[in-house]
Length: 171
Image (cartoon, rainbow, N blue to C red; front, side, top):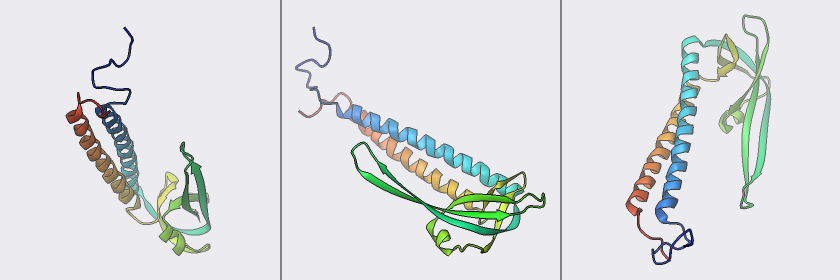
């Protein structure tokens, strides 16, 4: 007897729909967990800044845009653009801190080199800062909602896979 799919079962060499949906549900679950952990990390950073963050005046010393072009397995090209601001400030410890921060395009467009800005930073880790109080908490909320959305879609797809189990693939 040959191994593999048997004739007459209704399963051709095509993959059963339930299996495909199950794999998609698994992928969505993994992505939801990753986004949840990112949200938790940002939330922990936000709490640290809220509890021990101090206000300090900084100067924007540089602006830069990093563009990347990626080619996926199908040969499709995709471009991504990231905007960075470089700030410089000297905390009471006396050592000048120069750090980059990924920012959204509106903040990038409004910023000017030499402009003074107020930051909220952690004295024990001065390169950890935010431009506005609550920026990191807001970012954590976005990642949390993305995680919940991915999880919800994953559950719906898993339910579809469950309902389709045992049904043959269309020939």
